[in-house]
Image 1 (tube, helix red, strand yellow):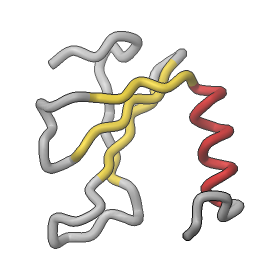
Image 2 (tube, one colour; image 1 turned 60 degrees about the vertical axis):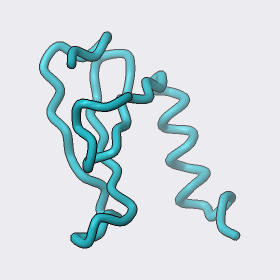
Image 3 (spheres, one colour; image 1 turned 90 degrees about the vertical axis):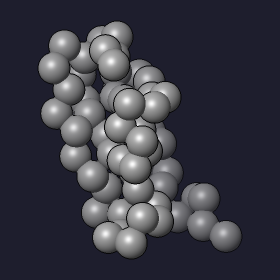
Length: 68
C-alpha cells in the first residue's frame, strides 16, 4: 500500500509496543507527514499527521496530558 507523502517509508515500532501483540504501533516519517499504523496489520489503514502536529502530540504525550 502506498502512503501519500512517503516515498519509501521506513517503519519503526514504538518502544511501548510489546511482543505479545498488544499496543502495536509503528511510525514512519516523511518530508511533510508522519504515518502511523498498526504493526499487526501492515497493509491496513494508516493515519497521516502533519509533522508539526505530530511533534506537538508527542510533547503532550511525554508531558502526561493523556494519562488516565
